Amino acid sequence: MARVSSLMRPFPESARDTVVLETPSASATCSIVIFSVSFAATDTSATSSTDENDADETTDGGEFTWVYDAYGLLSDEQYTELEDELAEIYDEYKYDVVLAISPDIGEEHDYRKYVATFMQTNEIGYGDTHEGMCIFHQPDARNITIVFRGETQDDFTESIQEEMLDKCKERLKADDPFGGYQSLIRDLKSGLSRISEGKKIRPMDIDDGTVSSRFFTDLLMAFVIMAIPTALMTWHQVRKMKTKVQQSNADQYTADGGLELTEKRDIFLYTTMTKTEKPKNDDNDSDSGSFSSGGESFSGSSSDY
Image (cartoon, rainbow, N blue to C red; front, side, top):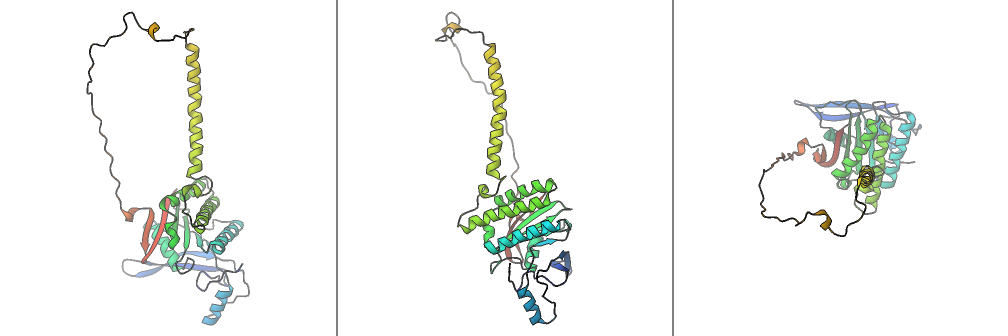
């Protein structure tokens, strides 16, 4: 499958490459190496050269990768399967998705902005509007972050992103990171399919295990749980009933002369007041939603598990 790009993540001839982020420090700008990435070149005829023309020819005839596993988490089979899935998304939807698995980068970083800078530095995104998404996983920090770039970021709303992460985290907690990545990719494809049809993405459009399916499952379970004790209590009360003959009116149950009310009044007892602190709306401390990096708008969510 040919994927032509003059800029984006070309496969080098060597077996390893290094992805670098430019991160500002207090006194100067320093280069921080995120991770070294293993590549598997598919075009063995490509040769490296310091000559600019030769380099351009190698890039145009080569391919680029979508999976960066600096942590060594994936098997060869899993790596290949994820590469193929992301390549299909690139070809079918013209959407650039990258999975980056990294050692802990440190809590001093804003994970979402870190990923946004990574996407800008490595030119991740399709076309002039840079349509794309990055899945950034730090197993040691037990954090999963997703960041969207381009015009389609508005379609993947904050609630949709959180739903995608919730499903992914279920797999991560079960020590199934590969399943977690696939869950995010499937949900992304469902969303892109809706966008391609000119429709909005709804929570129910996300793949199996979403809000809608869990709602009906939980509703059914609640009904069963409530129905069983209710049925038992009803059966028990019926067995305790002493009345053998049904009465047509209530006269049989009142004393002679009936009931007569002589006085009625209401007594005020007490007042209960509860207070709830209004949450602060501070975008800088938010782990989800829109944000800016390098003068460009992004949208993303980050969550520990």
